[in-house]
Length: 186
Image (spheres, one colour):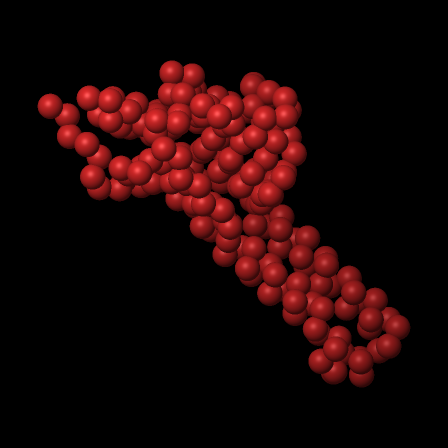
């Protein structure tokens, strides 16, 4: 007789493709450097000695640190309560019974463009990284933790929405979900 899932099991998230944080910090460097360079031209070095000149760039840098730390928060956990996805500022727990595992598949988003998130509704996105709530091309909803577009586990839910995940081993996660679903029905 199979045993039920008692202990939580983490499924590692695939490493991000590209360099999302490098791109983020490049943009932030321009956002910090350009105003300072323009200030230097207008008011000279004496102005930079005051705290006001550094307030804006300091807030931009602090925002960059917060966003970078959030970017590092990625975890997929399967336990008795279901599948919990923690990503950046978002967490979603989905009961195994609410998944349509018979329709789940592992896809490359370059080939299956209909599954590529189209509109960020409440999410976090960098080139090669998507986290949070998105709308698909057909208007349906999706919760995403996509770090590698070439191997995405697409999990349709009974409410018509979708989970798009990038576990390091998508087949292993899908097999574990199917095993958990079988155990819960027996």
